[in-house]
Image 1 (cartoon, helix red, strand yellow):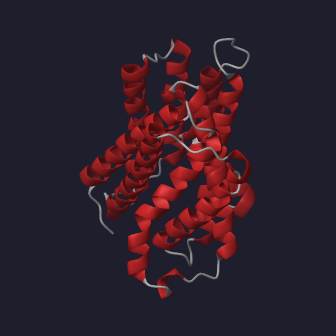
Image 2: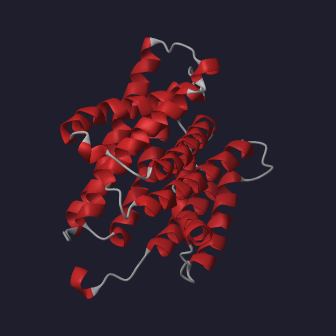
Length: 287
């Protein structure tokens, strides 16, 4: 197993930068395109980007007897995307990014309920602190904040956690490449259904933003995969939160979005608790 933290961290930061650009493109495109269109193009463009690789693999390598598991993963992933993009359109970009990055808080409890993996004890106090942090960001009842968008953004993190646990359920027989490809095919098909009543042809600038969102999201996912291939997840994970920093800087530059003190405190709490939950002692052989 490869163990190069510098390379792993570099790929994690590249992924964070790409995901931040994806968030900017989604937020800008959402001003003129409904959520259904944004999600569909995000899935479709990623599928088109990955298709040449899939064709080179051959049909035999893509056969699966776990189609139901793939469908669960795709369904949760698409729902998470709808919730995430809804939040991006209505919240400051950094706050929306952080809410979906709260996934590590929920994964231990979802895995416990779904596949019987008991969470470590640290997950319980970490989850409580994380919920306090999310409350600081969402600010229920605050007039200047769209609380519904905040709640939906937090839900995107929970749904993404369900998608991650569903991956774990099928990863014993399904390689990562097959999981990614099945997800993009099924996600594109699922996200096409609402177009029957929500389709509207995007103008050229919006189409450019949607294509950019799909490409950068794919670049981000590939770099994230490489990051976890180069170094242990517990050491690489914290570097992914640079996406929140990049997003805050881009949103400040493009839209003069500024974080208030409560949101900044909430972000620190969520990031710290997610790192606590994700941290595992690295075996001596890996250090």
